[in-house]
Image (cartoon, rainbow, N blue to C red; front, side, top):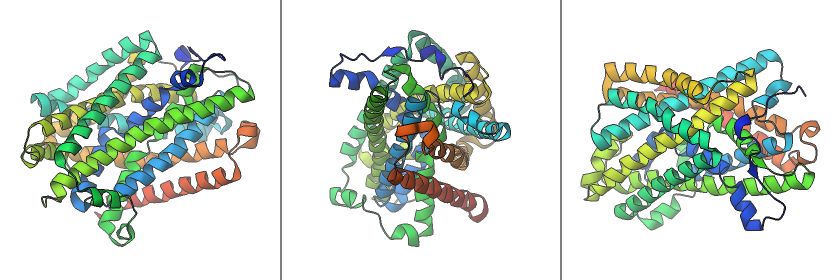
Length: 433
């Protein structure tokens, strides 16, 4: 293979993994990348679909969140395995493809990252408006300044970024934990919601929201990012060392995605226990949900925690979006930009449409733009999933770590399912509604 730059070269193999480490110390040493990836599964783009599902169908779509999370766990496992075994991320390993295909995949990945950043801009602006009454137009502009925080932490090392992300995830989880307690959900109905219902296939509206939840859950840029982040650990390059790294990195990823699962379930449960229970079945906008929570919960604490969690979600996702953009640009076309330049470029591409929509259409337009950004992400997903499954199923590349027959079948089935469902979502969005 052509000698290419390392993924995220400034942090490549900077975190030591010594042979004398105990099992628990190794687990802690590998912990971190999974949480940076998990924030993409609980970003502001997920909120609209979870709110819509809970307010319209109660707890019925909890099963969809569970299935989506299991699919995400499988794909992230493949991503980290690719990075550990080959020493390349999903973008740079695409050098094995013809140049035109590689450029096409790069453009698709950049569109996905811009769409994701757009959701973060909108989510953060709405949160600032809800918490501090800052006009949406000003809030969109303020979100561009988070690049300064990112730069400061990047200079101090990846561990500081991981610590910040884990702290913000904790804020989100605690906020929703309190909100679930305040909303007092119906426990038997809640547990029943994790069992798939035949209505999913007989009710077109339920199927549409279900596919939206799937499309908003699995994020294409996370597959590029995870394959690069796992290379920040300085594990042994032997077969045993790689096997051990895959084992601990998979635990890290699975635990982190379990937090994301809790947050997505919590949003839907909150919507079901408040809006659906009260007969408010058309709540899909974040601002509307925030406004209704105080009278329904009987305290303003619920609304405040909702907005705080949204702000934490937006800022969390902006960190990983920048890192993913760096991986994609360096891996596909070998262009190196300073982190602040990459951040500024991506954020400008997201801020411009957000400013235009706020100026002409207000908060209602922003809500529609948020949903549209998720449709764009859905469209890009197969262009990351299919190459990932292809490479991890290549015996010449992966050698003894190649996907086993059962995993190969499961992986290609997931890729086919995601592709078909996302194409259906796009067809419904543009041609049926």
